[in-house]
Each structure stands twice: as structure tokens, then as C-alpha cells.
Amino acid sequence: MPAPALSIVIPIHNEEPAILPLYDRLTAVLEKIGRTYEIIFIDDASTDRSFDLLANLVETDHRLKVIRLRRNFGQTAALAAGFDESIGHVVISLDGDLQHEPEDIPNLLAKIDEGYDLASGWRKNRIDNAVTRKIPSRIANWMMKKASGVDLHDFGTTFKAYRAEILKDVNLYGELHRFIPALASFYGARIVEVPIKNVPRGAGKSHYGLGRTFKVFFDILTIRFLLTYVTRPMHFFGKYGLMGVGSGGAILAYLFVYKVLHMERDLVTQHGPLMMAGALLLLAGLILFCTGIVSELLARTYFESQDRRIYAVREVRSRKDKEKAKRV
Image 1 (cartoon, rainbow, N blue to C red):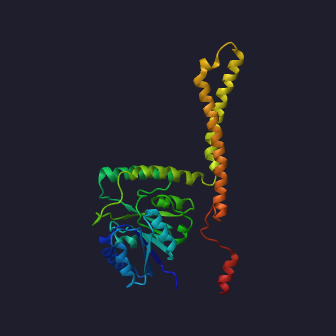
Image 2: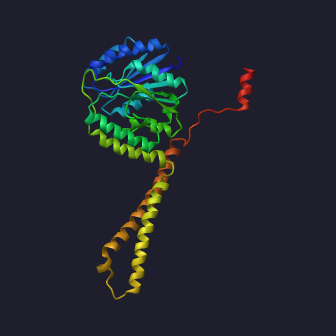
Image 3: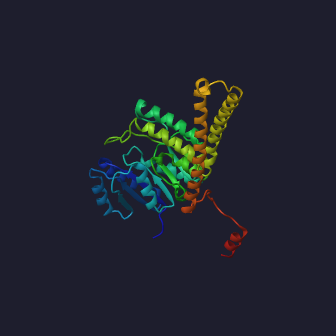
């Protein structure tokens, strides 16, 4: 069977009330688009009847596939499982709680057809609680924009469309699914933002709260390091290591000269804190240098052992290819 044009990837966890309405609306939209498609649901160890409903739907629709994870691995792992299983030329991901409207899919696809590699949904008019969701989200999105250099208003939404080849260059782990645009930008993906509707959750309970904001902050630091220094970690650790060794060495050199010139004075009594600071700075600098060397070895092991490239090719053209095409 030829690969479908579209792969729809939907992670779910305890979304029993939304599954049938979502399936009906989704298939109606996809049929109207008129392209071949597959729908992949990833059940992240639901404890309600979500999997049973999906298992019944599979018996009636050959374009539907359901993946059931052994335990609750989280949304990033569920998305990664769906991406790995998808075979479509364009992959579209969305949540399974009906807060993402399937009717917005054509708008995302239109941008992919224009030549973009990634069309990211933008919840321009959010209906979430201002204190627990809106304000923290705006702060996190602003920080992410500054850290990654990707000009998006909404990194957090799952509703996105990707060219399949872009996802091959992106490895997901932790909770980095919300930062796929930043990871894809490392390989030169052309990214555009598309306004989408944000509707109230019809049923069930949200799996996100204010506590997630703190996790996002640490993810932002991780993304900043990955985008800037993943192929040259010594440039990061070496810089601060040099500062530590330089400042610590200068302090200790000054104290050494001072002691030589004032042998009668007790250096520890008069400059004990300064001596301790110099020793700590020198030690910290040496540790950072060693960390940089180890990181360089790990980076090379990562890329070479997995045969991963530090670049991404958009296309290759040559006169030979043109001549071959003419003969055909």
C-alpha cells in the first residue's frame, strides 16, 4: 500500500467522553480534504474505557490505528510513539480532549502546501484561567522565544503540522514535545504560526496545572543549551572554566606575592576569606574544564554511534539529474 498523504497523531489519557465526537468530526474534515490519511491514537495507559472505544472503532475503519502504552509515560513519549508509527508525508498532531478543533486542520495544511516545514497552532484568544494558565504561559512563551530565536507566540500547543522528514531529525524525551519548533529550527526548518480556535474542555479534567510552569523553565534551559552548544559543549563550559581559573589564579597569585613581601604577617588571619574564594574559583574552573572535555566526548559518541548528522539537507540538484530527467 502506498504511504498516505496525512498521518493524524492523537495522544490520549482518560478521554472517554471526547473520543467518539472527536473521531466523527475528524473523519468528516479529512474526507472533505480529499487526501489519503491514517489516524493514530496513542492510549497513554488510560484507566477509563478510552481504549475499549478505540478498539471497537478499529474494527470498522481500516485507516485507524491504536497504540496502547504499557504504562503512563507522558505526552512526549506518547507523541514520539505516534510519530514513529506514522508513515504519512505530512504528520498532524492534536490533543484528544476536543480543545483543538479538527476543522482547523485545512488551515495548517495550507501553510505546508505553501512550502513551510512546520505549521504551528497559535491559540490567539485563549479561554483558560488567567492566573493558572494564561499569565504563566505568556511568560514561558516569551522566555522560549528569546532562548530559541524562534518567533512564535505559542510553543505549548500540540496542534501542529509537520513534513515527515522534519520529525526524523527530532528526538523527543523528557517533556520536550512543546519545544519541537525550537528543536526543528536547529536543522533549518521553515516555521510558520497559524491562529487556531481554543474552546473550553467539553468533559473530563485537565492534566495540566500551575506546577508545570516550573518544569517548563528547566526545559527552556535545556533547549537553550541544545540549540547553542550541543555540537560544541566545550565552548560553554570552557568559557566559564577559563573565568574561574583566571580569577582564582589571579587571587592566589596576589596572595602569594603579598605573603612573600610581608613574611611577618599571618596570611590566613588577614585574608582567609579571599584565599578560600580564590581556591574555590580555581577548583570550580578546573571542574568546568573537565566537564567540557567529557561533554565533547559524549557529543561525539551521541552523533557517531547513532550515525546522526549535525546538518540537514533540504534538496540536492545537479546537471546530471536534469539530464537524466530529460531522457526519461
